[in-house]
Image (cartoon, rainbow, N blue to C red):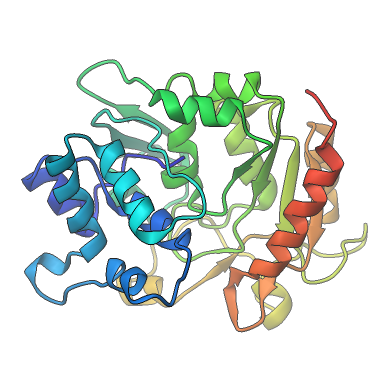
Length: 315
C-alpha cells in the first residue's frame, strides 16, 4: 500500500505538467517485487534517462498507461503482469493530495519533496486536498485480510505516516486480525527524522493514529542491549559517533548529502516502548556490504519469526 503524496523529481514534473497520479513510489514497489531483478525489462523499468527531464521509464509507462487504460489501478495491474510482480501494489488513495509538515521548531512545510529535506526533524504531518480524501477500497480490503501488516522500512513522515492519514486506513488496521509490525529504519540521510531515536519513531506512529495498534517493533542493534549499555545505532557502534542535536541548520547542502545518522535505541528505550504495548525485537539487521541497508535474509527471518508468534493471535 503506497502513499500518494510524492511531488519531487520526475514524479513532481509529471504530476504538475501531465496531471497524472504520482507514479514514483508505485514504480519503486513494482520494481522491487519484479520476478527477476536482473531481467532486462525490470532493469529498463528502473532506467532513468539523463535527458528529457530525468524521467524513469517506469514513471513514463505508468503515466502513459493511466491515460491509455483509463485508470491508475489498471496501469499498475498491467505493469504487475509485465514484471511478473510477486504480490500486489495498491495506492492508498487516488485523490490528489499534498503533504503538509510541521517541524519541531514550529515551521510549516508544504510538499513531500520539501518536507523530506527539512533541516529540522519533523513533528507532525497532515494531508491537504481540494475535496474530501477517500481511500482506495481494494487497499483497505487488502489490509483487513492481511496475515501480517508491515510498516516500513522507509521514510517515517513522508512515506509511512501519509498512508495512515488517509481516512479508513487506520480503521482497516484496527479491524484486521493481523498483527502490526513496524520495521524501524537503520539510518537517516536527511533532516526528516534527524536525531530521532527508535522510541521517538514509534511515538510518532502512535501520535498519527496507531496508539494501541503497533504490536511489534523490529529494530537493528549491533550488539545485545543491556541496562548499562549506551544507546546503540549501527554507525554509533561502527564509528564511535555520538548522537547529535535534531537540527541541521549549521550544515551546507554538501555536508548534508554526505552525512548519515544512525537511528539509536537504548535498553531503557526498549522498556519504555514495551510499556506502551509493542514487543521489541532487537537484532543485527544490517547488510554487511551496505551499512545503511537492511539485510534481506535477516528481514525474512525476522518476519517469519513474527508470523509464527502471531499466527493464532487476535487483537
